[in-house]
Structure formats: structure tokens, C-alpha cells
Length: 312
Image 1 (cartoon, rainbow, N blue to C red):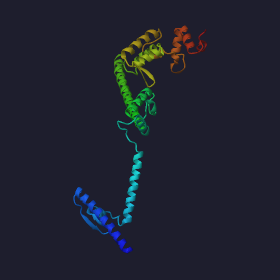
Image 2 (image 1 turned 60 degrees about the vertical axis):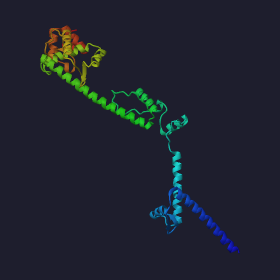
Image 3 (image 1 turned 90 degrees about the vertical axis):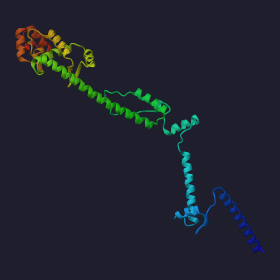
Image 4 (image 1 turned 45 degrees about the vertical axis):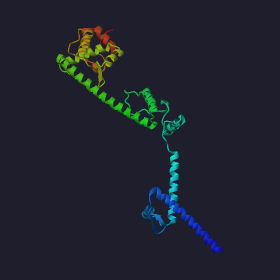
């Protein structure tokens, strides 16, 4: 009797399961249309779509392999959910100030200009000073538009390198412009005084130097700031033929004396001085023609008149 009871119970359970399956199948059929059921060699009766999927999965051969795939997929979903929780989410329009601040901190976005510390470029020319105030102002803009510190540094470095390139190009263009002006003005002077290496030209240049030396360093610097005088090869060169002539005439009127012969630049120096200015011929000429002047020149050279046969 017990066996018959058990059999009846199993039959009832099977009938209930079949009824449930029938109800589920009926609901599915009513919602999506009739489902085609096929016989699978391993898993029994399955919907055709499921059976087709299994036929393509050569790694699913039995319940054990199917369970492993399900477990792995579940684990992957869990990891993706964990990564999503750690992901940096851009705050929406309804985000709180705290959420926005947390987002900016995670992204490395400064809150104010002081949060951006820019490195000074190493290749800046000495004549192009670093503008720290402008860099700080850019830091404020970077904070306003939401640049990260790394992004802001990249933009800063690009702007600095561009400025250096522009500055060098401008310097080269300015040097060329001054060279062109100098060549044009020198051509005017050559028409007046002859070749640059000629004695007349050199004499007038020496007179101009004498007149220029009368000015203070500030006076000379002002002329240089106005580009009327430039320094080329360590020498100051006048960039105006008119200014050169003016200096030459002033120098000539102040320094020309009886013994100064026009066209002989050696007369403008001290023949008693050591070095390039020393001139034995001129020493004898000055001693013979004007002993008092000779004494003054000897004293200016730091020497004694007696050394040259002149009585004190």
C-alpha cells in the first residue's frame, strides 16, 4: 500500500508540474505567439531558440559545464557592479555641492587659482621674463572651466613654448630690421666721407665717439632704448646718418686743436698713453710745438715729463 501511495503522490506531483508548465506555456504563447519546442539530446525538450544557442556553445556539454558558465557570468556581473560603484560619475544638474566637490577632487580639478602650481619653463630667454601673474590668472580660468591640473599644465607649457618661439622670431626680425637700417644709413655716410675703412670716415667716427662719451650712461641708454644707437659686436653703432654727422661735428669743434690734422684719427688720442694710442712721432711733435700741452698729456697718461726730457 505504501508503494501505491508513493506512486500516486508522484503522479499527482507530475500532474501539477505539467499543469504549471501548461499554464506557463499558454501564457507565453498568448503573449509572444506559439513557441516551437524541440528535443535536445542532453537537456531534453527545449524551446528551439534555446536549443540553437546551445548548439553553438561547444563549451556546454552537460549540466556541470552549464552551471559553471552561469556561476562565472554571475561573478562577472558582480565585479562589474563593484567597478561601477567605484567609477567617477559626472554630477547631474541636481547634484549637491558636496557631490560636485568630491567629483572635482577625484578628477584633480582645482577649486581656485591657488590649486594650480605651474612650473616655470626652463628654456625661457633671459630677455623674456616669466609672467607669474598671468599664469595665476590662467589658474583661475582653469578652475572656472574645470580643467584638471595635468590639463592646465599642458596648456600652460604649450602657451609658454609658443611665446618663446614668437619672441625668438620677433628678435630675429628686429635684428634684421636694425641691420637693414644700419646698412642704409652707412651708405649715406659713405657718400659723404668715403669708404668705412678710409681715414676720413674713421676720423669722423672718432670725433663722434668723443662727443658721445660726453653724455652720461643714462643719456646713452636712452638713445639705445629709442634704437638710435645699437650695440653690434660689442660696439655702439649710430643708426642715423644725421645723428652721426651731428656727433662728428660736436666732437670736432670740441677736440680739434692746432696740432690735430683732419683725416688723421691718431690726433684724437693721447700719444703718450700705452697701447694702441702710443705714437712716438706725435710725442715729439707735441713736445716741440706745445710743451705745456705735452705735460698735460703725459700726466694724463700717468707718466712724468722728465721721462720725455721735459723739465718740470
